[in-house]
Structures are given as structure tokens and as C-alpha cells.
Image (cartoon, rainbow, N blue to C red; front, side):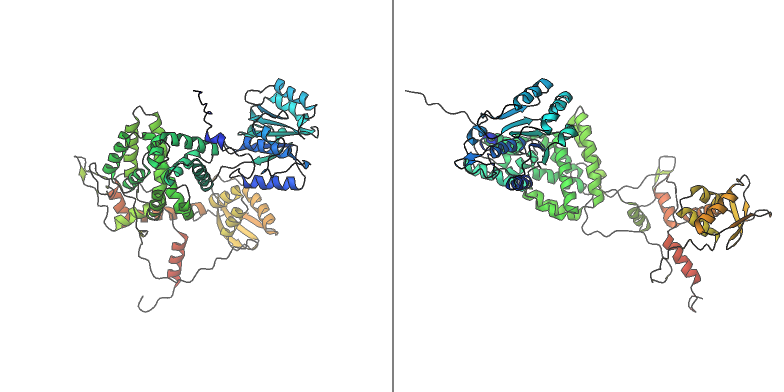
Length: 589
């Protein structure tokens, strides 16, 4: 019996490679631009396609070569409607047309290879209307090769077209880019890629699960070739079907639902359950570093949904990711999410370098669980004022008090960490009792520096003019003795530069447009400089803060704490001034 020969298997990426622009997915903007150019007969002689791997750069180049050389019974006429094959189309599709020359610049980088192109350009096409040169990975050409191509690229014969493709557009010299029409091919959106894969599977008669396709699309990162290669592998791995379980095993992914369970345990402070889940996933074959990456990816997803709620409707998300991600986004604070991202990002690096990846991953989760929701300063103050952080007890014989223990969530087998879960929790801010003041908005009037009425106005004017030296001299090297319009009398501090008097007079004349007389007082300086007054008020505020009950409670709860700075809010100062100036009522007396 005669043996029947079976044709070799053609991978999906080649079998379903687009042959015209109607089947090219995800590049509508480029197709529209080219369509308008062909319709108006404004076809450039050189094109450069750039984008990440697998988005259709070389495919677009071959389709353009078909469009340039389209010929049918009506004659030669370039067009983008390639639904009907022309005279030269089949040969170009199969890569055997003599007038469409493809060159891989990665293996033909030198000036000698470009010299062959320059020499062959002199001769017209053999049968097609145009001779088309397709140079893939053009950024790999040497500097001499680029320079040798410049003249031909700028003024080619009318029958020559150049099409370049590259993934590294920044490595292409600007002299080349300026001679080409550039198209940036974008990553294919997830929803378009999912529909494309479903169409191919329907043509192949292969059953699939939507969640499995979502995993493949996510792993493909917007690349059609990568997604189709993964789909090919998934079909083989699943013995003719594409299921979530087989794709997870193929990609080495932990169960997405278990990853979300792990995330919830960590954010809830249930470190015992979290470590148990991590160990179970590890025993099932999941890589520790991959699990940390999955946790970081889910943290990013929840954060995006919190900031942009529409992100929860992404077609590439599984139902668990969509529903539970939206729920977690409504319950977790932004502070908890950003801290989780930082810890996971750092832990991922540590796990990659560690000798025992599982141990490093466990330490990362422990760190995350206990730091999931460290209290903000406002919450610490609120807890102290409400008696939530009692003073520490003695530790040993030294009488040192222990730092307060953060609230712990319920734990399974290993104790609890801090909990980051919130259900419409109000912001807790310590409030000090204040006197009743007027609630009318205080009108803010910008100071008119053209008319100076006080010494402090001069300091404000110097600050507005960004004259730092004059401002510092006014604040620390002299004291005001008397002030009137056009005349100032000051007392210089010991060691002050006398030349500052002339400088100040000149500055004032420039700033105000009138002459100012600045005199040095012969009297002994009395009082304080502006800088000394500010420091005195700051010292008084610091002393007052040390006597504040809340601050005392903080010092008791956190031994070794120091009061670093005291800031007096402007609205509090204004309120005190209004209370002091308000007329007293009989009850107030």
C-alpha cells in the first residue's frame, strides 16, 4: 500500500498570520492613515514600523508590499483593498517574489550588505510595479551601514520602496528617521486579543474556558505572536482543550483565587492562615517568587480599581479578580495598598537572591502582615487621647516601658499581624477643645507692596522680590527703632555689615519708585531682632507643647520619643486673635 504523506504542522502564529489589513488586529490608527495616503495617492517611499515584539511589524511590511505591487485585470494600481488576490500577491505572501527583498539586519549588519542593496537599486523590478526592500531589526545595522544608506534612502529611484521594522526605535539614527514615515504599532488591547483567540479556537474546533484565555492574554502582554504561541502550547498541554487548570499548570501560576485568599489573609492580619496557604501552593508546584509577583500584581489591580473604578471592567480579568478586587478596593486604604506594594516589590528582589526562596517569601509575608496598616500620626493621637495606648510597664530592672502593641487580627496558628481592613471607617483626628469663634470666612487680601507701612512690610517685600540677603539682614542684623513713610531708623547688631544700610536704601528705591532715607540710630539697641522674636515664640510654643497632656501621653507610651518641631497653624493664631479682640458678653465675664 502507498503511504499517505501528512503535511507538517503549521503553528497558529503562521497559519493565521494576516495577509491583508482587514485581518490585522489592533492597529486601526495605522490602517486609517495608510488608507488615506493610498486614496490621495500620497504614498511615501520609505516607512519605518516600530513596536514591541509580535504586534505585526513584519506582517505589515509584507501587506504593504502587496499593496504597492497590486495588479489585476485592470492593470497596475496600488490599493489597500486586498480582499481579492492580485497577480503578484501569492508570491509575496509566500515570500518568493523576486522584487520583494527581505533582509535581516541582525545577521547582515555591515556596509558590505548595504552596498549590495545600493548596487541592486540601480536596476528596475523584474515583473512587479515596485521593487520593495524590507529590512527587519534595522537598528542592528552598523554606523557605516546607516551612513551608506542615507543617500539612496533620501533620493531613491521612483520604482523603489523601503520598509524598515525595529523594536528599538531609539537606536535608529535621526538621519534615517527623518527620511521615513514612522508608524508606532501599539500593544493589542486585551479585549481585542481575547476575541481574536476565540475566533481562532472556533475555526480550529477546540473547546476553551474564558478564564484560561484571560490568563493567556495577560501572559502575552499585548503581543499577538506570544499569545498564539502560548495558545498552541495550551492546546497541546490540555490534549485538545484549553482549560484554566491546564493553563495554570503550563504557566506555573498559582491559583488566582488562592492568591486572592492569600492577599485577604495578609491584609486582615491573619498571618497563620497566610503562611499555610503559601506552603500549600508551594507544595503544589508554585514558585515562591512567582507567588510574590502575583500578589504584587493583584495589589496593583486593587489600587487601580480604587483610583479608576472602570479598571474593574477589564476583559482580561477573571470573575474572582473583578468581583473581589472591587470589594477590596472599597475596603482597603490607599496607605495600606501602597505599603503592601513596596514590601512585595522589595521582597521579590530578596527572594530572587535568597538561597532558600520559600523562607524569603515567608519573611516577606510576615513583614507585610505586621505592617499592613501601621497607624497614621492622627490615629496614634486619637488612640492616646482615648486611652488606647497605655503607658508601658517596666521591662526588667531598668524601669523602661515597652512600646505599645499594635492591634492584632485573629490568627490561626501563628499569631496575628496588623489588620488593614476598613468598612467605612471614619478618620480619627485628635481635637482639642477650642473657644467658640466666628465662622465667617476670613477675607484674604494680598499685601500691596507699593505702599509700605511697617518694618515687617519691608521684610515681606524683600521675600517677594527673592532678595534673600536683604531679607536675612532685615531679620537678624538690625532692629527697627522708628518708621515713617520714606524714612527708617534702625539699630545695627554687633558685627553687622554697615554697607547693608546703603544696599537697603537702594533696594527700596528700586522696589517702590521713591527715595528712602535709612538712618543708623546712635542709641543703644533695645528689644529683639525679628529673628530673635520668632525664635522666642518658637521656644515658648515648644515649652507649651511639652506641657500638653497629649504630648505627655505620647512620651509615656513611646519611651525615648523626642519633640522635634512645633508648627503653629495660621488659622489657630487667627482664631486666638479674634477671640482676644471680641467684646466680652456678660456670661463671659
